[in-house]
Length: 188
Image (tube, rainbow, N blue to C red; front, side, top):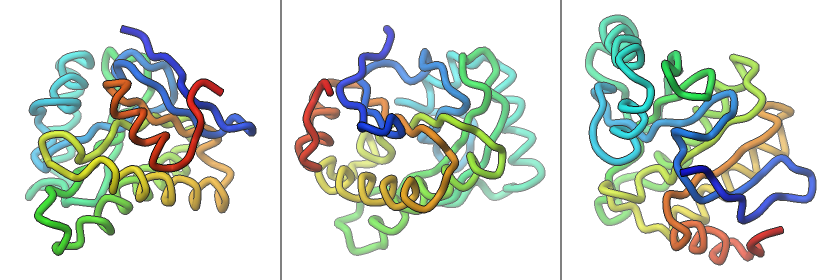
């Protein structure tokens, strides 16, 4: 399943797509990982399956060196991409929704900021994000849409890298929520 662009900003730096992030060709895709970094369900499992065993080995190395207790929520780390068309995978752990009273908004924004910081450090020009925390972690999609839009726009306004940021939604419904919540027209 390839991706279909539903929105592109006039300057070309931001786009919204529907499809399979594991097939998206760019410098780095973001993995909505769990803290173990050893694979799981949803996007995390799909990325690990598509990348092959090299990604798991790279994640085990990260766990044995940088994050022996697991990657903290809101932080990010980059690894090789294995068999994926991207060059790198940036892993981040989104917050589990617990009613909005446990710093979930700030932690979600941190996930996006930390991934873009790593992209700058590694001179990655194009980074693609899934919808972090809105699946099994239960973060309300409408609320996440506003946080992601504000965070990404602030980063684009103040940094030259990454040059392009793409959001890859698995369903057209989820992409539609993001576009609608932020007043963006589809298929520009």
